[in-house]
Length: 112
Length: 116
Image (cartoon, rainbow over all chains, first blue to last red; front, side, top):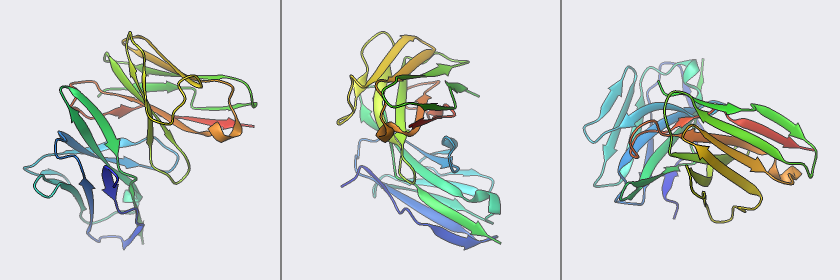
């Protein structure tokens, strides 16, 4: 079983749609969680951190469910420019040694 | 915000030569940097953790004698691909954390290596 799992998609949605991605992680000792966005042939860029209390940034909402060991990303009112691969990242480890572990990414395609 | 600079952005080299990739943290000190590799349509794979002033920690299956990592200062880590072969052609990306170990990574812009 992979440590961080994501549905690779692609998720194909029309402009204006709401779309949600989930990411599950296996290590219950995981400490911090993030969503990154990666465009084709570019480096990943931090989208947002994920907290148990939920985190909202404009059209994007991220949530963490520690009991079920998953994080989610909700995108409202999708734009064409939201088309990208969304990477779930989990910092795993303890004792100050946190290794960032990536999911394989979920591809989103927003069409007109 | 934290900036990580990677150089070169792309390189084409002949089989058998060595290529050095630099990763610099421009506005913060990084005792730890991470090197990733990404093949087309695949996920980022951690190759090694670079530790300032000590040996790098390599992931299983990554040859330490082929992928030499040097982290001589708090702002610079280098990855040298020695005796490169076409199968080493990939996108290499470095990253670092500007804050605590629990903080998010910031990535360099990546190096696209093509070995002919």
